[in-house]
Image 1 (cartoon, helix red, strand yellow):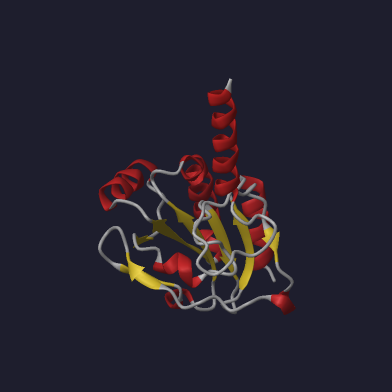
Image 2 (cartoon, one colour):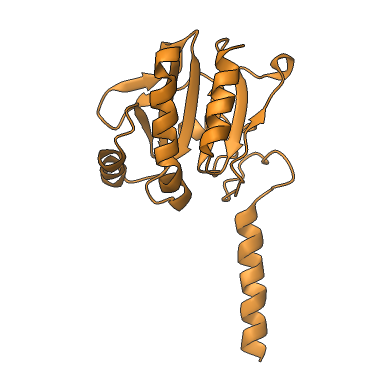
Amino acid sequence: MRAKSISLVLLGLLVAGCAGNQGGQPQAGDTRFVAGDGKMQVFDAGERKAAPAIEGPTLDGATASLAAHKGKVVVINFWASWCGPCRAEAPVLKEVAAKTKAGGVEFIGVDFKDRQADALAFERTEKTGYPHIFDQPGKVALAFQGTVPPAAIPSTLIIDKQGRIAARALGAVKYTDLLNTVTKVRDE
């Protein structure tokens, strides 16, 4: 009976540790996993923060940057091949990216804390059609600290035409939520 009680206490501590700081913004240096429900949170235009300048090597050996898409709406998705919810949302991102590309919306994936071989295999399977920055050390994710907890994957940000963070989702995004929010930000 005592072993069962200890096991339950340890399980409770593990679950509490994975939940992170769900009540608000992450604390500086907080890298615990943060679960999310995938709902899009849209920020009022007057309260939007400028997105940090990000750039990095892509999985295919090129370079991707937010600055290359100045004046366009950009969707940034943080993912990893080892993340189950990331795998589940990949078809949604691919479909919304294809549907909104003609309207001037760009997508950039950020492969976070992953092995490059695994990330490349994931991309070969999913064929998303947009570039993915290989961010093994997590520097791109840390640039968004305060908006996205560094260990919250999957996470999705929508950057408006003025380069400001217009919306975010922590957790796997839903097709309708993502498409509606991207369209709303694009049409502002």
